[in-house]
Length: 531
Image (cartoon, rainbow, N blue to C red; front, side):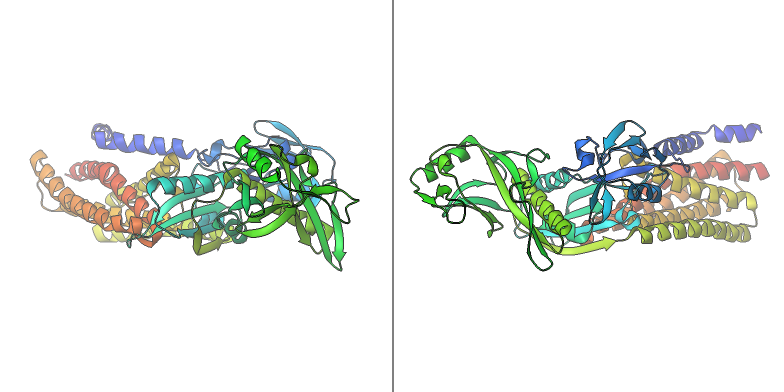
């Protein structure tokens, strides 16, 4: 017992125990977690008006606000949420309760489905963040049309992030990527959104111009001081509303207010000062200026607005922007109109991207694959540990040496995913492959330590140090070779193998500096105890 206490009090064992405790603290596991976490909040929705916020991308999963009740009914999972939501009465306010606050929301019927303007996902059971491979979503790889400087790339990434923030999206990763050929890319990963929405939102440059004739009055971005996104000054235009233009053809017109900069308002005043006033036919003899305000999106005319005669030569900062949407039914047309409005509002707020982007690759990933994969991984991990333990027992004929290897294998996995939870690293399939490589390398190193320990009969202090010195020379040589081999993969494939490279390097580093020394201390105790 005294020898065991002495072995447990060695610095190697203390370091391992502390690392395990901190990892469990970082993971904060709760297998009985109930509720649903908010993934997105649509702008101008009842949830948005109720000031419901999406969690930030850096917020630990277990610390995120989650829904516990809707209309007095408990919410345990996603199925509960959508089942209760579908049975609510349209336009009747209900209470939505979270673990932090109580909100009043009004469900509406959109495309024959009840909605309060949010999407949700099951509450996580640990702080470990899953990558798109495991939780589902869209990954898009974009390439700028020209080489960008660091400042230009920073502006591009900031613009894209702003666009996604305007749409109320969470769980978004936007980062620069590259490959071994020196090509520049932007990698975007968004959970819970489909491929077409992502491509329409961020792949297009989104250049907005408002012109009178061939002269630009204002552009999206810096020329626009404010864009209204509330129901009081945006939405379906009450003056025109929706109308049926043919069989199975509806058109709905939207309108929203914007505030221009003083410089843009003055440009409008200068450009309209010399325009003639005309009477437009079919409008009840209303008088307008002879040239309208044409709205262009990506150099395509999207709408034409008549300029009232009272605006001639006046520097007006508050104006209204309008457009339309179409659909086979009134509801579809209204939905399309509001979608177009949101996109136009986004571009007016953020401005155009500094460069055109080309979609190189898109992946639309289903969460079903991730769920099945995780179950398979857990089963295979258990089978692998048992198989390795059985082989070691047969090889060394000593259960007392095989069990510590199995324990250290599990400890290594716990510490590695604990570090991933602490730094907010997403665990995807590539990262899982890295964990497998790291654990496999760990088993090899422990076998090296075991073989060196059992070789010869000199267990004196000097003899033991020589054995460990030889074993760790082999381990460190293999470690540095593996790290050097992983570095090119960090950049290969436009950085999409980064998870594999980083997880492998983290895993083998944890093994070399934490678990291998602890295993050596365990082996020393058991070997010397048999003497």
